[in-house]
Length: 155
Image (tube, rainbow, N blue to C red):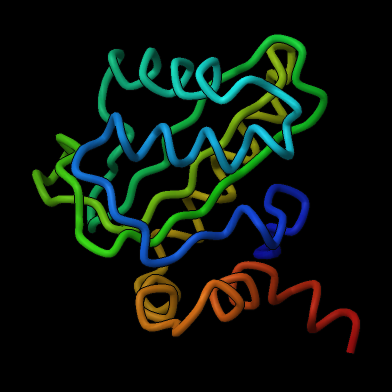
């Protein structure tokens, strides 16, 4: 399944975001997620920062999937960000990151968390799809790409 409408909302797809470093990026992501997750933005940013201390979530090709589990969260909440300028992420290939798909999961999500991570990772390893995300002209266009299965099914 390539449709991420179960993880993202239209207002959690951001483009042209400027962030000087990972910490500022995580604060931006947390602010976007806080509205949907009904959680404190600082708590959400801290979850990403703590997870990143275990090892970079930058998996190469300019892409990162920061994630973490949040006590009290009711469902998985995703935020997609296309950065205006890449940010150093200490990724496995040492390339800076310009595409970020962040995920927050309930503390007890277990396999649902892992399955969602696997879905996102699989899709973001598709070079053609990633090229389309980088070339999309607006958050609306990115949203359409990320939720394309739903649009095709509804037609």
